[in-house]
Each structure stands twice: as C-alpha cells, then as structure tokens.
Image (tube, rainbow, N blue to C red; front, top):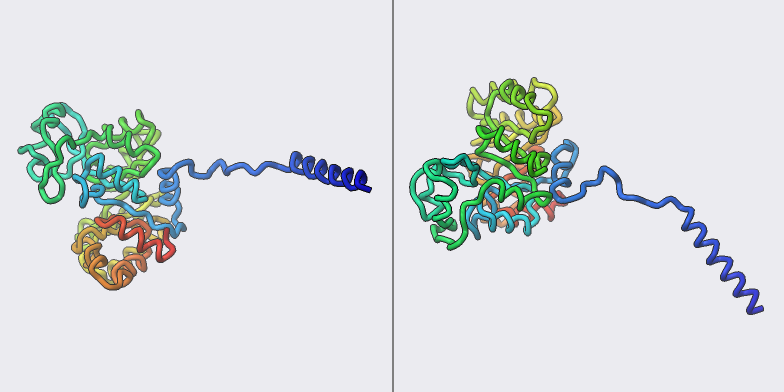
Length: 314
C-alpha cells in the first residue's frame, strides 16, 4: 500500500512538472518603462494618466546650492519626477547650470557668467540659499548634470531654448534626448520649423501667461496647431473663470496642464508656502488639482509628494 501511495505522489509531481514546463512564461511587457525617467515620460505622454508629475524648481535649494549636483541628487532621493534647471553659456561656449546671468547671488564670484571661461569659473564655490558658501561645490556643466540624471529623473530645461541646438546635440550624444523637456514662449511656427530640422527632438512645452494679450494670441495659435502639444505651462495671477476656461481648452485639446506653485504670482496665490502654512493643504493644492493639473512645479517637493500620496495621485 505504501508503494502504491508513493507511485501516486510521484505521478502527481511528474504531472505538475510537465504542466509547469508547458505553460507559457509570463514575460515583462515590452512597453513597460525600464527606469524611473521612462516611467515619467510615459506619464507625460498619457493625457488620461491621473499620476501627478512633481517638478523640483532648481533642485533641493533649501538644503543645497540651487542648480548643483548635490541639489539634483537630493530630489532624486525624494522621488521627484522632473528636475528643473537653468542654463547659461560661458565665454568658451560651455553650457553650465545657472539661473542668474551674474555670479554674485549664488557663487563667491562676481560679474557675468558669460565673461568667464569654464575653467575660470572653477575658482568659485556655490552658495546655499542663505548666502553661505559650500567649499568644493562648483557650478556644474549641463553634461555633468545630464550624466547624473540619465535614466533617473526627467530634466526640464527652463532658461535654455536659445541654446536648443547645443542642448539637443549634447542629449543625442549622451542618449538622453527622450527624457529632456524644454519650454519657451516662442511662436508656434518658429518651434515647428526648428523641430523639423531634426529627426529626433526633445519634448517641448509652450508657456502661457494668461494675463498677457500677446501671450493669449500665441496660446490660440498653439491650440490650433496639429498635432496637439504635449502640455502647457499656464501662469495666472488670479484663479478665475478665464483660467478655468484656458485649462479646459488645454485638456480638451488632448494636452496636459502644468502649474507652478513656486510663487503666489504664478498660481493665483495657491502656492507651496500657503499650503505648507495652512492647517489644510488640500484647501490650497485642491483647487490647483481641480483645474485638471497633472504636472506641478514646486519649491517644496517632499511636502507636495506626501500630499499627493494622501490623495492617491502618486
């Protein structure tokens, strides 16, 4: 009887092994994002995605010098989706990260960035937000920043459209073009003509100052252009019906909506500091989300991420 039971057990095991061997293997989807940057790019290209993309303004400038490598590494650790940076060109045509045209505010140097070669800039240290120098922390080149960001975080080149050709050439060399977003207020025809020059381009987003009549004319031109834009950055001084109508037009066109909560003047007072100081952050961030916003640029990335997680938007 024991032998009979053993035979039955062996038969069951053999049958199970055969079944497993013959079953089709479940493979990862070929279209599944392979890294964090690819995941964010997929969300940016999906108008129906409820995931709110968090953009860190100049990196973690509260704890490190803005637009520095440590500031980039910090927001990557936080889980930020997009690093916003600004570009300037040195005397010897090196693209470096700097918001200001001058060195005075954020470095131990003085004068215009463009008056120095890159090697000369290395004599200066970067400063934290309170003007305290960080010995050994230098102005990074765009190349250095992109090498740190590759596959880890999407990069938004804000002050940099004038360097489009140079930026694109570098991103192609490094293999990061698909994870670069560049913004501008240029007329749609100029942007389309420039993009037509190249078989492969960075993501582009127009900036709309809704209180500016000229900006609204450009906005209407973009809405009429085909194909639809990836997204629009909408800036407004008061959150009123004109903002709601513009937001609806953006969403109806198949594009995504970007709002800056970094300063009250860019978002009708519904900014990061107001949310941070409020006993109810939802009273501030809620109306921004109600516009249909799915990309937010923030000066408080960690705080915003926690809020969005509590709302099921991450």
